[in-house]
Amino acid sequence: MKKETPILINGRVSKLRYRESRSNKKDDVKIFTLEMVTIIDELLKGSESDFKYLHGITTLNTLTSWDEPRLKIKRLSNKIIELRKVIPKSAILTFRDFNNSKDEWKYGVIKDREVINFLVSLKQEILNRITNHTQKQNPTKKVDR
Image: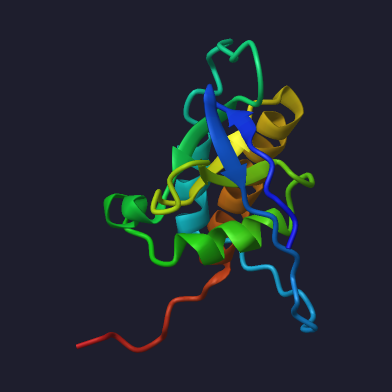
């Protein structure tokens, strides 16, 4: 087992979580949902600020599973996995305090203009697809009683 190396994220010594997919299933990306729009909005909070830590990595707003009730979503970790399939590699970090193994895993987007622009355009694409999908649905001929 290799020794974990601490990394400075948002001014705190943190531990990154590296995980490669072990699935042999064909990827069926499920990102075109309103839940994903909510997650992207939350991850983009702070993107308008120019602030960056002098040393280490700066992320935008971080999310944990504790945010699920507030955001009215379920299984944030699964949604992050889906999002990782379409965004630039290593744009979302999973990390926690290096010395506290009980600390909740956090998900944060690296503060990078390219990543921010990608997420903004992805959000717009999701909204466009949702809007187009609902407009294409035909009303039923029978009146619901």
